[in-house]
Amino acid sequence: MEITDIRVRRVTTEGKLKAYVTVTFDNAFVVHNVKVIEGKNGAFIAMPSRKTKNGEYKDVAHPISSDFRGKLQDMILQEYVKTPEDEIGEN
Image (cartoon, rainbow, N blue to C red; front, side):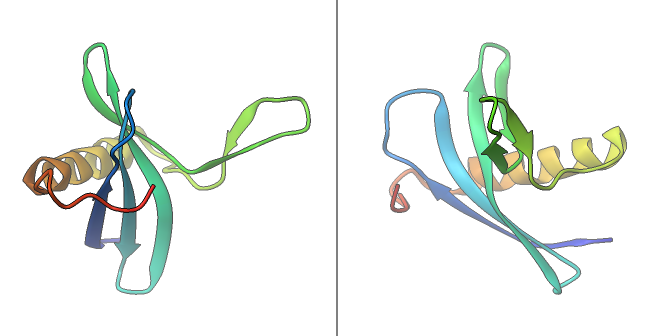
């Protein structure tokens, strides 16, 4: 499976959330709302999630292997760094 497109929308809100990302796989499958979060040790990605009845958040879609998650995170963060701050998306 290849990552064929990454689109970054930076956000203007204060806080740890820095961007929303849309990732396309094999020009055939899209995952929206991957988040770029600024943590204590640098930026990382958070997969799209939903809140359950008991208040926990569960990922809607996520990589199965840590190797692929690392590759996905590296590619998203590379694209995030290249995206100018003046390209702010709607929050």
